[in-house]
View (cartoon, one colour):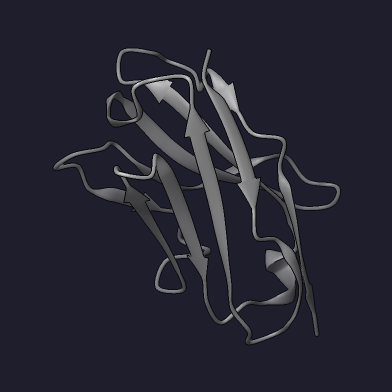
Amino acid sequence: QVRLVESGGGLVQAGGSLRLSCAASGGTFSTYEMAWFRQAPGKERELIARNMGYGGSTYYADSVKGRFTMSRDYAQNTVYLRLNNLKSEDTGVYYCAARHHSSENYEYWGQGTQVTVSS
């Protein structure tokens, strides 16, 4: 069973930065596609970034492209999301998720970490 634990959220002013972390345990980290989702207040959860793994490219949603950067540390079994130039519309709960490459849906989810951007 894969366990994902996010950290790094908080309150930040518009234009500021945060780095979210997602520590994975209980599985073979390199075999999973990892992703970050966001759920803003009153809205559905949306995919904002995903990475296939070794040799794979990273996808970013248009809303975060150029401001957010996803990275993976295979030695630490950790995935990061760097959030730069934050805007009020980036406020929400950020979730880390994982799935096997052969799976249709994301099978494992973290508990989420709150990001609040004040204008």
